[in-house]
Image (cartoon, rainbow, N blue to C red; front, side, top):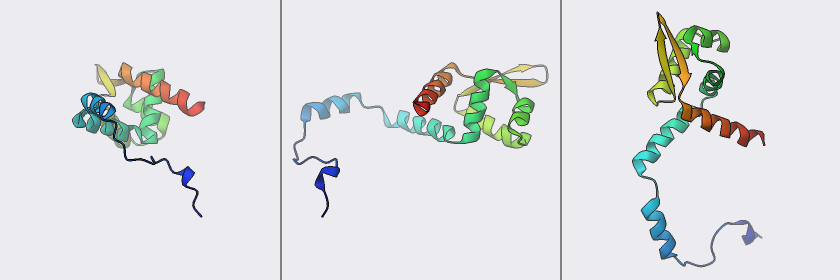
Length: 119
């Protein structure tokens, strides 16, 4: 016998029109949600998270990140390009070197996620 209490469903079919209208007025636009999904997809890769974590500590050039992660330069560059295209990281040029650093907003997100998963 199945215990019906374990299911999170209503026992009635009442639609709360006031709540529905309020949510419809304030729900986030589908285009924005699509862009958010792109960001979350980029953040779902552990290597990219490690790059973000490293850049929270210090800006770094590709050579430094390559050494840190023990990866090839093309592989690291691929991850940096993905993070840069969606605006999570930026870079500055110093001579022949590009130094990557985090956008301030991603630092806040990363710190909140760290707190959430370590509690």
